[in-house]
Length: 160
Image (cartoon, rainbow, N blue to C red):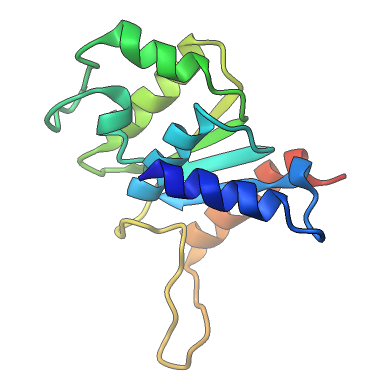
């Protein structure tokens, strides 16, 4: 599934109006896991897996509060191939928060350039505000703070 993402990244990097050294990624849930898988194969300037449902990437089974990889050496080998700076975004109170945090902890253990942030919000996918009945976006205070944090993170890596 992440092969499609890699193909899209390669395509975008080849567009004449895109600086291939300034491509960033943001994905939520399975999209966050796809970013992790792709980052082990291809580099981008920065990426933010938000609420990454990374059980497959980490090699864990079940939804334990404190998950562990079934084969840590294999998991760490995938992580060691990552060169992209990452912002891992959790969600306080989410039943998969242990998985989100484990992604961060293992990346940190491997010496990767990684940051952690977590917000308390009732909705999975909080990083993507929905549209109101008027068709406009109406982010709440938590979403505004999360988006501002994302812009600051990406600004450090994507600006010339």
